[in-house]
Image 1 (cartoon, rainbow, N blue to C red):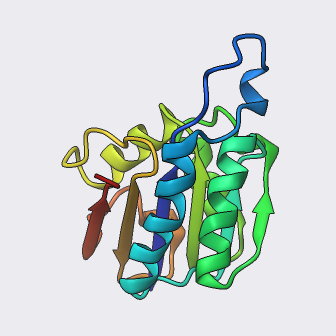
Image 2 (cartoon, helix red, strand yellow; image 1 turned 180 degrees about the vertical axis):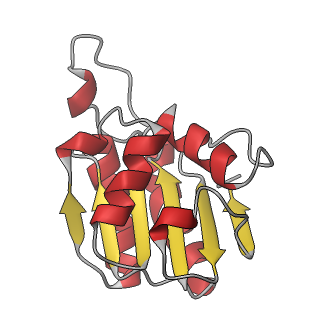
Length: 156
């Protein structure tokens, strides 16, 4: 069985207009939503073996909230910053696990959710989570076959 959980980073702070995009922290809503969504994921019984995150501050901070609640370690991957849907999926495959969570950015997150849900998920707002499960151990087929189950959670 393969389970892929994807999460868009929580809401970031845009108040510093000169701050580099990569360095933007979470705002108050983001700091609220990340642990809340981590709890919802934990309550759903999701405990990924591997948690991958973009190195951007807002993604890393979101991933750390999930890691704390789920009892896993965050693996930072600089290639997830600005990654496309294909790159996000490739990172999950390369993780070496069949139970992976990826925390990254749009538009890649929405593109991947739309691809895997066959268009039924058309938007991944900040701190949204989508979990997909397939009855296979072959990552090579996940983009080509429908998952046996999927769930889309949003903070509000």
